Image 1 (tube, rainbow, N blue to C red):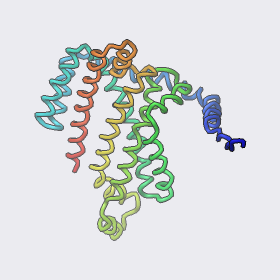
Image 2: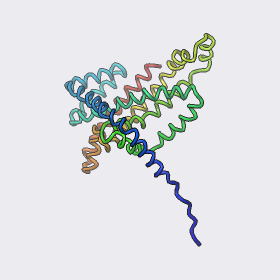
Image 3: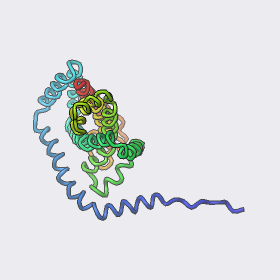
Image 4: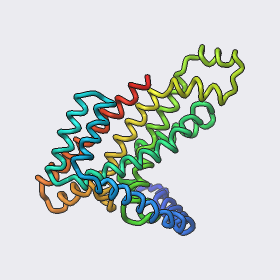
Length: 279
């Protein structure tokens, strides 16, 4: 008796063909902006490297003190001093720059999309399943389409990081606006506020703590993705981890991993406190 077989759905072929089509027709544009973006990122890193290390360490510690208090300031001072001592300062600045730029772009795009999802049911029905898809897709997959569009290097890493890190900014912006008490919205209606006035003077200000929580999560996801993106030439601390893996140097790998943890803790504590100050 012959075994019954069902023809395989050629999903992989469809994706390859779609990617080939997009690359053929749009890669000229993405590659044209790749070099300016790379110059901007490298310029920021070089600008930071221009200052003496101790000046930057004190500067970031003062930011930590002003925003989050003495404990975070002391932790920042000790943590960054350790990274300097471990000869990982330049790699730290590369990772920091990429995370900040990626977070800025993700928030710049994500917050308006989150607002749209909050005020439009149709947009919400489309965007929320898309967010589920983006958040559950393995991070490594985002590296694949980045290469044909931007080539190997820091811009591909930036692109994949933005896509991977954006969903929390969208979700929590939408959630924050939806959680604004109905009574306040009705009061704004009673005073004759337009939809834009309600959004900018009532809903958005009250949603800021939740939005900041989304930005905090975006920063953390961006940092995790930047490390993974070292496989396509992102450099930084992720590059140190990747080199350690290739050379089977456990000490170097753990050292770079500890540096990533220190940077993550500093960014996490400061961004959390910024959100709490807005409440």
